[in-house]
Length: 338
Figure 1 (spheres, rainbow, N blue to C red):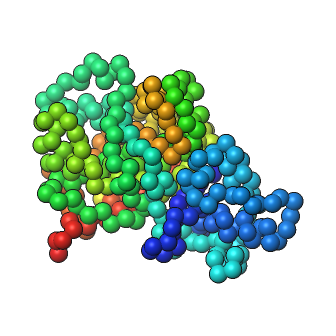
Figure 2: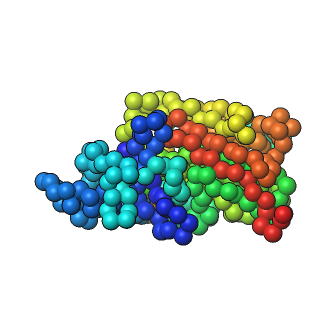
């Protein structure tokens, strides 16, 4: 099952949608509330009153809402775009005709881990540093800004004072069942689904502030890409491999591939990350957990002289994780610049 948060137009509130393949090979969005209303009007054995209207509502009641939404997916199969309507509200829309928002528009928290060894080793090597023993003892993370999430197709403005804008190709897990002191062996049962994550990074800001011993702070504070939609773990189950999934992770800049990795290369599983994150503290529905950058998944690691330089206004970035979709964004000029 694929779920999204979307808006029909600018200024619209985030609505919950079910994403399904279209006849032409693209995707369409089934509006959960509108589809439920149409199905209720048509009659049938089930009363669809009480379906969640937003992603936070669905996640807050995940044990009830997940099976309800799965049943709605089947019931709505006969609803057709441009035909099924709830008053003036269409029940089925083309995905490229709506604004796809971050699946969780404003998560309670966002923790980003550092779980791919190749990235850590290479990035440290560029600074003349060896791996530290503690990295192999427990997964580490930092907190970032949960109010700075941006969705598929966003224009991301360069933050002020940076000349070294970078991307980071990652996977995000979204919590559907909260908990504390989770066991790494079964902690992944708390995950409602996965998304593509872009941990946008201003490397010059990050480098300067981390010399003080804190950070990355303003180096990451301005935007985090999340999307294009939330994919439930059952859709990936047959690709399980190692501590992750045998799914390719690819970055393209202006249509040209510049990075390729694989989810299966995780050193720390999401179960291990969740166990660490929940040690002595509660995780809550809607919390976002990032994997950290896959090997080769950023310009810092690739080196700017080999990757066409740092990102510039006008660059179109596409991050793709097999099974999760493509998260695209365009780099815009800093606010106030022409």
